[in-house]
Image (cartoon, rainbow, N blue to C red; front, side, top):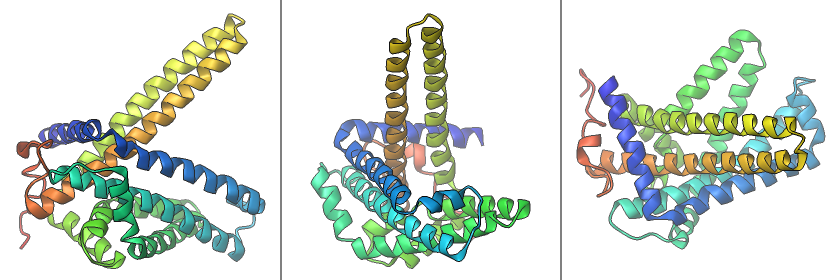
Length: 281
């Protein structure tokens, strides 16, 4: 397990190398994050009662209908920009030199599949939310179901943008790869999330300490300025983490289907990533 985690950390660093070589890839998660905030603000303006219900009050059929619409719009935007990111990353992994326009072109060519996948994701989200509203056991079932869904669909976006198949087939193929292999993609994805989380926590604690110290010294303006700077740093780190996750999924998909993840990913890091489990055919 330690060896697998170590190899996965190497994959995280390799993903960062791709982002360093193509810094424009950060545009996709940046726009996606901004669009998500706009959608959230619009939903709050159009459906203010939705947020009151989301706090646990009167969970009606209308609430779930509004929630499905919110999930659908949000998922469509997130999946669209993630598809553009993954598509551009695949170009780099395969030896090309992607541009932002290339990423958008790839996403635009798969709009129908992206929308279909968004519908599926929104439906799963509604089911999980309904379960979480059924009490403690429902909350546990919802958490486990959400984890299983995220793991099973880890390669769904790369499959969507690289293969001419529909969203259901992409989910099935992603789930099949997960069941067939030792799951290096899981450890690597968790490594990326854990690494970014540790850095974010460190920046948050540092910012809180410095801001409190400034307030204690009576420097209110300085404290507000510092808080704003640290908040911006946290947002940037989260966006970088999103980009690394998309690049990593593209690399794992490329290796799973072609046996190569490009020059920036050393073969020894991932050659066992898709080793079949004992007993599989």
